[in-house]
Image 1: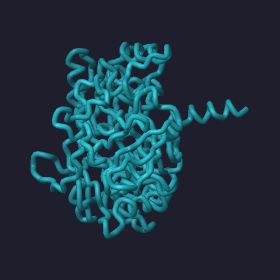
Image 2: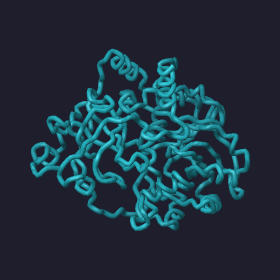
Image 3: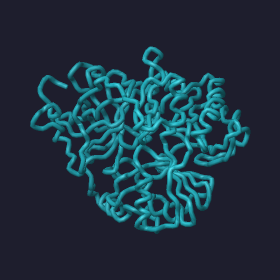
Image 4: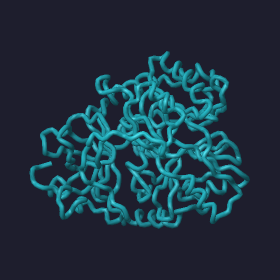
Length: 446
């Protein structure tokens, strides 16, 4: 930033009051503290997944905490090319990810469908056994509590493969009041992801030709090295990919991980951290970063998750329908909405430690913030997801972004940014939102 004191640095206004967060109870912390280089403490208070030691053996050198578990977030060192070398392996070959932090919360029993349908916004009755769906769960205020992949193994059994927020206790709490005839608990199942254009080759070696019969979000029971697993065609990358859910994972971790890794390496693949650079390009959201319990789906391009024809009641339905009516009447109930941005500056090749501030180009006043920035090799520009005022979300709208000096074109000076189309790079399997957009564009061209 400039030499003049900014609101983020002012003692009298410590959290950038010009960014209007009056519609939140707990504002985002927009203070720009940077990365102080603090080491993570490893202790018994935070759980180690059954794959943790196997990730360490493959070179894990940094981690974060996700769902109260240690989560590998760096495999290639900077000398080895860092995160962008991992990106290259993902988009050109095949990669193995330790995603055991996606805890599996099972809802099972005679009224499992009724409970699940009550807590998700989409219609659970439309999910056939041995299929899954990306879903969201909201609180009574319409805020997003979690955005898991929901797997339906049977008529009376569902698994929530959760993102980074506690969900089991909330589901159990809901059921204290509702009294559905179900059991709700975390189970000893840990997923790993096989992602990249050669992922099908790896999976065919492991499971045979049957792997080709799994539709997107379809499920299949299988075995690896005599250990039972569940396979789905899903992932967090936007690339071709699968997930292997290891049953009895505290016992079977090595027995499954090692042969899978052997097949991945046979295709010149490697273990990488979850590819946030690729998921940003695909417009895939990260809970806690791009949304949280105070964020409505209508703010973050997830309106398609709120069907207008679901007759059954669900948590948050009344508020979400109220929000929809306001939006359709041209009255947004929010101060900010999430958009895609293309921005200048030096290539951002690592995680942002702060929500970097977005400013109005005319006044210079900070009005928003980035949530997920990264460099796009294909577009040869920095891309980001970020929140801007609701009246400034049109494609091409110009902003300024305050980047740290290491990424700024000139130290202390903001870089130019423009609102851009999301996704920045199409997914192998477009989401329902992307399909709807493509259909609309096709109809308009006819």
